[in-house]
Image (cartoon, rainbow, N blue to C red; front, side):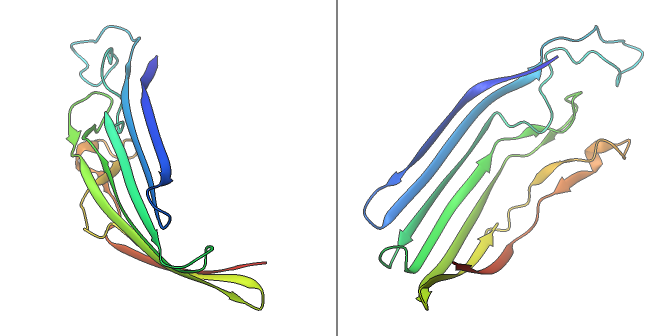
Length: 165
């Protein structure tokens, strides 16, 4: 049996009329709380009692702030933020760790009215600092999972245009 306990704190608000902030933090203690005894002849068998769950960081959080240059949701808007997490166990046996990481993201958007309809163009920038971190491990199809950590995407830019009717 597995159990995760912890706390989560979210803060959303405006610092000034034009500056908004979103911040969250999570503390999680996720581990196996019930299992059979470990068999010394089978190191990868059962016996996970009190091991930490894989890919579950103890501490994780994000802080993101935006600045509105325009009025009433129109005009230029920019934002920047940091997302971070501490190291995680790569497998349920707790034989190796994946390192902690911090990623910088940002965006810029411009909204205007076209024939009474709101049109928004936005550019999203993810992993601006090109942080090298892992989203998990391939535990299902590879016998040696510690060498098959799944890397997160490098710096990515995505543009979009939205029309509201």
